[in-house]
Structure formats: structure tokens, C-alpha cells
Length: 214
Image (cartoon, rainbow, N blue to C red; front, side, top):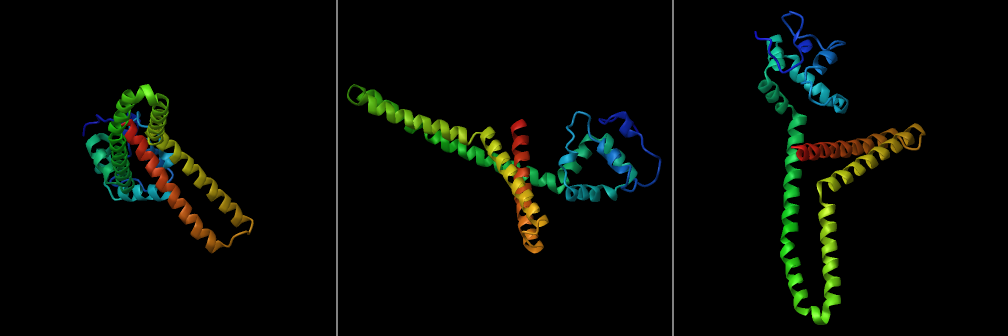
């Protein structure tokens, strides 16, 4: 089999066994370096549940199938797109993109109204110039605020703030449990809801950044 691969040479070399290695002490290093060298290391952002899902996808594959993933970029890409967290990320990214396009259309629909007001100002500038200009400036200011509010950078910033707030609330709830201020059943119910909200926002944030880069 050809050893040409889009992975570093050190990754291609593997023991000549008939079955893939059992997940253990050596597994994270072998699979952790199986990505292209130019891809960012996002391992620290993978939750235990997501990691377990990826391991479940890989554990039943033969050595030849795993080697193909190392050398065949298309096979690797197909496997990546079949993983549920990636499907969720792509779905959220598409939803965010569609919502952003809708907001852009709504903003563009306001443009004729602004143009109309400008024309009216030209007609009445001799008698009501100051009043008309003040109204126009206010509308333009609102337009800029709206565009800024719904800009990708502003959306990302607000999403990051919401994530940080949820994280702080989770930490506060955890301290309350340790201090005996809340019983375990109430803690579990509230904590699960907070973590669900946090990870949903984290996925949306990641999809938005991916969409912006793309």
C-alpha cells in the first residue's frame, strides 16, 4: 500500500497487528496526531460524551480501514461528516446563516424608506430643514445601530457573553451545593439545564465562527 498520506510520516507508522489497538494509554496520542498538521488542535473542546461517540465510530474498524483514514482525505472527510456532533454543528451553522440572510434582507427593505425621507428633506429644506434633518439623522442612527446589533461580530460577542454568564451561574450553583445551600436533586435539575444551554450556545458560536471563516 502506498505510504503517500496527507498526515505526518510519524502518524503513518503503526504496529503490524491484525486488529486496531484497544483504546488505552496509547490511543489518545495515536489518534490525537492523526489529523493534518495544519488543522488547529481542538481536542480540548471535545466533551467526554463526544469523545466516546468518536471512539465508538472507530473501535470496530479494521486496521486497513484505519490506515485508509490516515491516507485517504476523502474517506476521512466522509467519516468526519457522519459524526453526530459535526452534523449538529453544520445544521446550526446553516440555521444561523439563514437567519443572518433574513436579517440582511429586512435591513435592505428599510433602504427605500430612508431614500424617500432624503427626497422629502430636499423639497422642504427651505422651511423645515432643521426638523427634517433631525428626523433623518435619528433614522440613520437607528439604521446603523440595527446593522451593528445584527452584525456577525456583534452576534458572536453577545453569544460569548451569554456563554460566560451561564458558566458563572453553573459555578455559583456548584458552590451552593458544596456549601449545603441546595439539595442534590434540585442541583442536578438546574445544573443539567444550565449545561444544556451552555453547550447549545457553544455549538452555535462554533458554527458562526466556522461560517464567518468559510
